[in-house]
Image 1 (cartoon, rainbow, N blue to C red):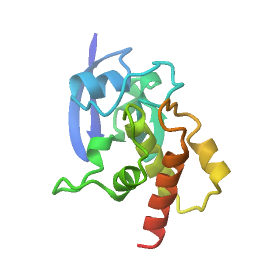
Image 2 (cartoon, rainbow, N blue to C red):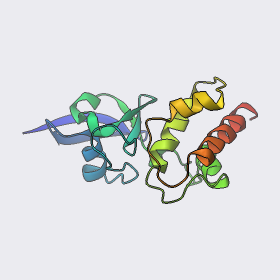
Image 3 (cartoon, rainbow, N blue to C red):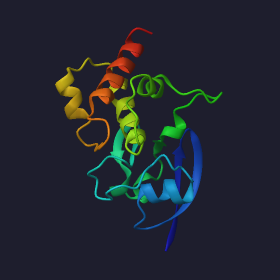
Image 4 (tube, rainbow, N blue to C red):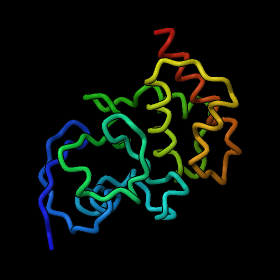
Length: 158
């Protein structure tokens, strides 16, 4: 049975009919065509499906779309500027070679958005813990941590 939800996705108000047991991952990918939200483990362990829900990073594979009714969701597609330019976090990931196969990258970038948004300075070990919900089999995480630190520095230094 379909239910209609109202959700703001990447700044745009959307009305979407969803199944009662449909995950937010399925809605974003299959109904709204937002393919940066990756389908990985489907049990909230890999972080590939991470989105920002009201500014907080969540695993969209274990979050029902019905729960998102009236909420605001941001995917990587929503980070670019109006003229299509990548945001400074995305640029830091590129500059620091924090991308290889790219499957984990959208989720890690959105977690970085949350980390950078809190205006706190983190140690390298704290950053490791903050991204520990993401599995990356390519990079060894060092370049990802470098990119987050670079983006955090960019925000602080203007």
